[in-house]
Image (cartoon, rainbow, N blue to C red; front, top):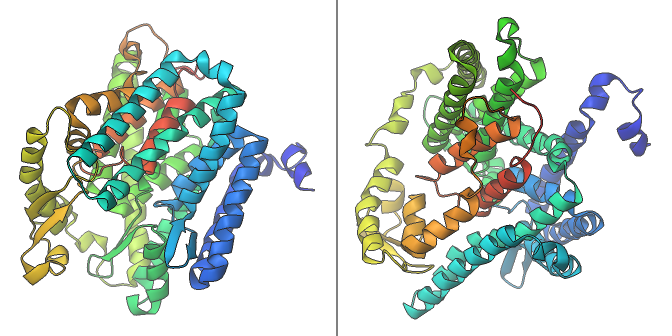
Length: 503
């Protein structure tokens, strides 16, 4: 019966066309329900984590592209990867780590059985091996410098997702049209992330926080993100996975540009596409993340520049106007939702959102206070870096941090920095950071701006989403974490070197 659902074209057009979206939404909804139950009943949570990870292994062993698609989908809906946790004898292991272990074992088998294929990919494998050598060198430097082994482990494990790059290559080999297979499930994952975010936004604005303590604890304990009161009944609902909502919004805008710019005399936005873009824009606004806002604006600006150069001023103005209306309507949707949540109390219009860009804002000021000491430490270790786990001491005025410091002095020693590129420079050194970033950026095709050349959706989406990722990484480090590394490798494998859907 289920097989008929996917193959019976006599089904209603909408149901058949978006069948994978619908199945994906059901699966992600079920995962959150099961995660909630596993969080409340710890023993069952461990069994669920192991069972679901084994289920992923079975799927990936049957078809590596299926495994990859659901691996990426987990990044989108799972944020820090703790939807499920294996707990035993006082230690715990997140579900994502378990999947990573299974994926690494599967890859060893696959690499050996496909060794001839990998030998024919000298650039893809060569640069990957060089990048791994950079990470290994940073580990050696860390050990020589006597960095804390605990800090080294916590710092380095974020980079380990890079080890899965051969899985991306194998999935591409198995299916040349991998993106066509992946887009429905990944779109469903992004939609579920947004629905969950907006539901939390409504829930915390509608009910007193003390009545939602279990929901809040589940959101925090599973690493889904942060829920913070900003006053007047308005809550910031933030997930680190909102990076994917930003990438989805830019990809949607790129698709809008490529499919509609040529027909700007009759510029009509398809309802599903417009709703998808509008929805993700609203989620990015709800996140209240300055880094993501800036990344979104830069990604949009890149699209506008390419359209201006390739399609002319008329297309530029028409597309700019339509995309701006979508952004403005997302803001309007947020205001309507805010009115619904606060039940007549002061709404978002009374909140000074410019405070998110104020130098007096606690988190922003703490970043600035870290900047000086981090720059000095980076310069002192410029060429080879200080290795994983290297720390910097600085004094912060963030009241949340000050309360946790000895004597309330605000002095903090940390190895985790929110200045993404300085983090790379400090840990890997200048040479290592350049090599590491070049692994991701070497494919960039600068001919996209040459006049007379056709633009594919894939190229336009690739440069737009990379603009988002690179700018966001300035103040919210993603390229040292599975969320950002996974996004970078997904862009490389899904969007690069495609040749269909032209402007």
